[in-house]
Amino acid sequence: MDDQQAPHGQPVTLYEAVGGQPYFVALVEDFYGRIETDPVVRPLYPDDLGPSITHTALFLIQYWGGPGTYSETRGHPRLRMRHAPFVIGQAERDGWFKHMSDAVNETDVIQEAKDMMIRYFDHAATAMMNS
Image (cartoon, rainbow, N blue to C red; front, side, top):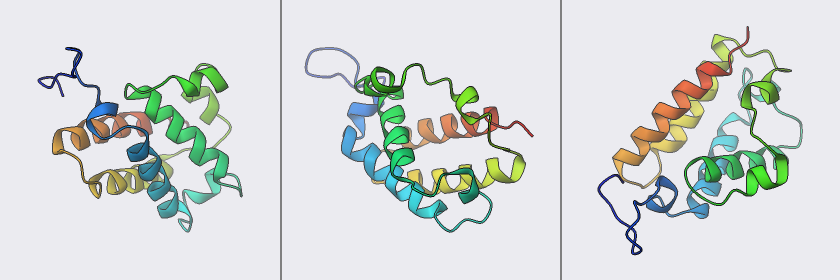
């Protein structure tokens, strides 16, 4: 990605390198499918996962260089604040990270992109811990 160039001469974002919105929507749907029956992680989410799926996909799209639809519709991400109402300890963090990293690792994109995302998710999962 650092050494790739878009046709307009700008560096290719991770968003572009993995195929854009379809990649992130599929990734997030896979992730939420994994947590659906997880007894530790599932209680962190509302009964209807639809809005969570949409919000997570839009956030990741924006974070990795895609359109800013997340911020346009929901404001600043404020991830710590949005997750503060939920008790997130080591078990919740580890479960969330396992499901997300498994979902990333099963995608068909270059290893460099997978590594970048997994490093981010590892850091973000730890940052959300509050218990």
